[in-house]
Length: 331
Ligand code: NAP
Image (cartoon, rainbow, N blue to C red; front, side, top):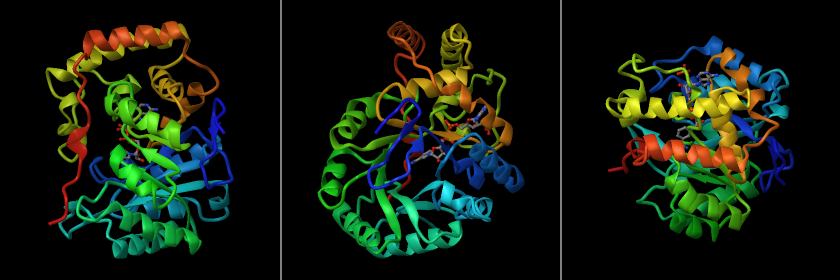
C-alpha cells in the first residue's frame, strides 16, 4: 500500500518511509574515503527523522558500509529498521569490481552480509547487477532457497532489463527494482521500469535521486572533485555539460522557491510523485539529513510538472544516462 510518505514492500510487514538512507558514500570507496564517526551520526540522525529504511551493498567500501551500519544499529536499533543490501558484485585484491551472481557466490555473500550487519536476517536482498554469464534463473533459485531458510525476507533486483526481470520473476517474486532515477536520469526507468513495477506490484527504489549532488542545488561551475570521486569520470560534471546542468538547476530552483522548498526537496518530491517509488537519499554527514522532512507531505501540481519538462527540454534535451557506472563482466 502506498500513502504520500510510506509504502509497503511485498513480503515485508513493516511499511517503510518513502525516503531511504543510501549508504554508498558512507563506505568511502569512490567518494573520497570513509569518515565513520560522521557516518554513524548520520545514520542515527536519519532514524531520529523517522527514516526506517537503509540501503547498502557489500561493494560499498568492500564491506565497510555494511560494517558501519552494523555498528550503528547495535544496542536495540536494528528492530526499528528495514535493512536492504545487495549481492552479485565481487572484487579482486586490487579492488577491481566485477559481476558474479553464481549460486555459491550468492550464498557466501548473504552469510558475509549477515555477519557484517550483525543481524540474523536481511529484510531485502537485491541482485546489484545482472551477471551476463550466470542464468538469472540460477541466481533467483538460490535466493528463493535462502528466503525459505529464513536468512532473507524479500528479494529485489537492480539494473535489470525487463527481459531479465521476466525470467527472474518466473522463479521468485520481485518485490523491489532499483534503477537510477532522478530529474536528469529518467529515460530508461520511465520507459521500462516504472510500467513493469506498476504491473507486477513491485516498488521502484530510485538511486542517485540527487544526481550525485547536482540536484542538491549547491554546486557552481567552480565546484571540483578529487580523483577518487566518481564525479571526476561522470560526463555530466565536465565542461561544457556541467554548465548546462547547472543552468537547469537554476530554473528548477525557481519552482522550488514558489513552494517555499529547497531544490533538494523538489528533486525528491518529483520522484515520489512519479509512481510507487522510494528515493534513496545518499547522505554521509548528519546535517545533510536535515532537509528530509521538507520533501514529505506535499505534491507537485500539473502546472509544476509541465514547467519542469520545459526547463529540462530547454537546457538538457539530450540528457546523459549513467551508463558509465556499469561494472564489467567476470573473465
Ligand atoms: P545521490 O543521493 O543522488 O547524491 C549523493 C550526493 O548528494 C552527495 O554528493 C552528497 O553530497 C549530496 N547530498 C546529500 N544530502 C545533501 C544535502 N542535504 N545538501 C547537499 N548535498 C547533499 O546519490 P548516490 O549516493 O549516488 O545514490 C544514493 C544511494 O543509491 C546510494 O547511497 C546507494 O545506496 C544507492 N545506489 C545504488 C546503485 C545501484 O547500482 N543499485 C548505484 C548508485 C547508488 P556530499 O558529496 O557533500 O556528501
